[in-house]
Image (cartoon, rainbow, N blue to C red; front, side):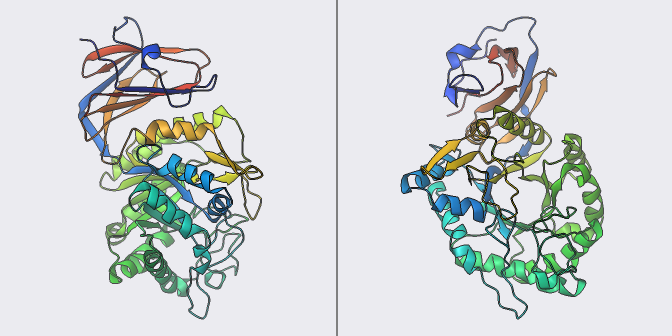
Length: 445
């Protein structure tokens, strides 16, 4: 039986001007051509429920956004957060205290006990509230610290690693509580917190080291009880928040302690270093009751203006993470300037949207279009479907709550990719242009 023409079939490609362009008639055929590699989807076998997609609100991103013209500011918000016009982002991330993508080092708490988010009121909170307005709902926001205040650190610095002093653990846990309460008063609810951004990285910017036992003990004895006792037990706690290479080791130590594990919602991870997608699958297989959340990824080393390869890196990671039980995917900076900053230590990176600050205009990069192939069509509440595919076909598939089936497939080859697509035994054929990504939607309301 033939597969009907999709309701939507959009393509973005390196060559030409295809950017989330509807073109079903050119690239999908209802005839099932024999001999093609097969992508088979079974809509009965369902996996994780999708939480959402999003990006990070950093002081750098918020400052660049405020510097745009009013029209460009609204366009960025619509492009990312409008559920009809744009990507419909529902997740976000924000830093507690400063990070490298802040304009300088700062902390919210001083040694006298004064706690203030006054600095965040300048740019961060207005940016997040504006995004919530366009999204039509509060975002599920993950708050992550890069470093405790200097007076809580073993090295007396916010940068260069160091450890949280044992005698400061309770005070630091209370800072999470005060941050959540202050943001709530500012109109921005916090959905979850991670214990520490990249806890095994000693950086020349804000950083703090936790071995697995230190993170376990901090969650069990300080952070978990502090949130619970403050009536914030529904705020999710995310461990690790670092690369895939050592995520299994971290999960094994923390989850082996029943009391610590009882406070933990799941594990967050980044994409820097080896891809190690098998580790994502292993964490799910060993601890299926815990969630997996991608919490940061970007192309390092400058803005990479016009690079299609950056978008392909996003596509590869998105498909492989989602296919291994990851429930949500949070990009790094939502917006940066043409240098890939500002960054107070010169650690410039790319972002899906860059700003020409002289003209006040937005420059959408390949990562923006690739993210749209997922975020615009795979909505919160969708269920991932099991697929069987030829090795050359990189793809994922989801069943939405409206009854539709969404398939995202990527072609990273220099020649067209033709394959047979079967959904519940109903077949058709697809042709993807060289170096392209496509999303098709079948059925539904």
